[in-house]
Image (cartoon, rainbow, N blue to C red; front, side, top):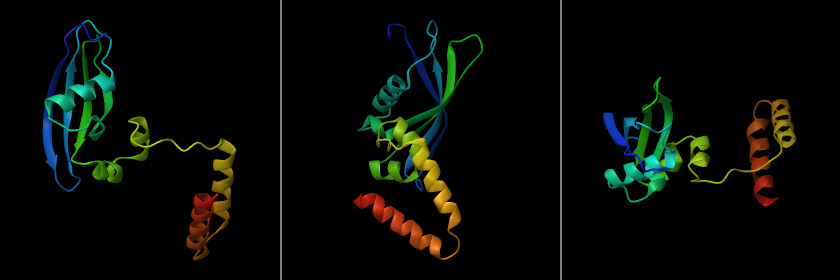
Length: 138
């Protein structure tokens, strides 16, 4: 699939020390191909930016130009895995296979939500603590 050459250009490069990451916009030029997979892009960027682990590269928000051949998206390169887990949204951690998705049924989620709605005030913190403890033990 990667027989045609793909050009990657970066724009708006910012080093963000507070969030322990580098962030920039990616322009991917891919003539003759419908699109380029996120994993392939992450590997290329990790190699080009000399990143030790591909998991530290987070790619998202891609839009394809009309007529094809060019895509634009956003890239974050974290300095370490702890910063990645701390600042990256949970859905992107699951998508990039950094953490595993917790499986539970739709009914369980809704029942927990409705139980949580019934508790108000200072009892809410205690109830949340008990629920977490029960989930960890059970």
